[in-house]
Image 1 (cartoon, rainbow, N blue to C red):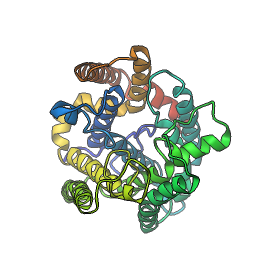
Image 2: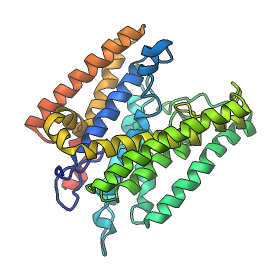
Image 3: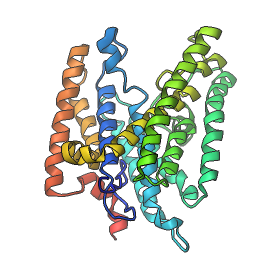
Length: 361
């Protein structure tokens, strides 16, 4: 078994598991999530053919993996708080929440044509504070309730108001009511829905991730869940009909990426568990062969922010799928290489270091 590795989940510099060694499989999974998000953000999406299908595979999956890993990182960060007499790292959590929230809003102003997820990250971190010492069954029950209720409320709010959510990004131009509405309900990452994968990550971070049996179960049951939810969606659509373009209760049948629906959430979370379990299971291979990917995972926040600046510079490119592939491959390779070189110099990325300030003090 490879050394235990503890993730620095996009804004969560490594907190130690009992062995004090990083779980490099989680770093590799985080790097894969970042690369998938780069592909989605570079575009173009929805192109026909096999090449378009392959390019769209990360849509609605890479970002869910990123959020699950954020929950894992928060769970690691609060590990000591769950021991008898432990204290919550509330100063660190508040600092990271505020920094990511403000940074996400500021980064949204760049001309990159991307929905920045960091603002919602900051809100999820803040909302998790009351749950960090809660019993695992309580968190699991809350995740189940929100999985069922969140999408229903999301549809009902549109039907009741007679408006269709346009996935408008929260930004600095919003007044407080509109900002909160976009963050919690009508934006591209509504907290009402996206809190579910974060809660799953909180639970997963409490599990014995070095256990080989658990790693195999994550791969097996995650795969069954991912495929099963998608197949169930397709069967229901065949029986009941394709959801219409207008918002309605038939949308509950959908497993399309970013549909905000339960079957999409279940399938995408299942994919995330397969990825995490697979990288942990292949820990020896990760340590020997995927060191560059591990380095990129350690600098995930820095890479995420860097790719936004690059996209803001090259827009409106890419205008064809071939250019999309080329830009994604080159950009990902350069950022991964730079991250690897940085880690050889310093183990923590520049933005990750900024997030550590309260903890270091």
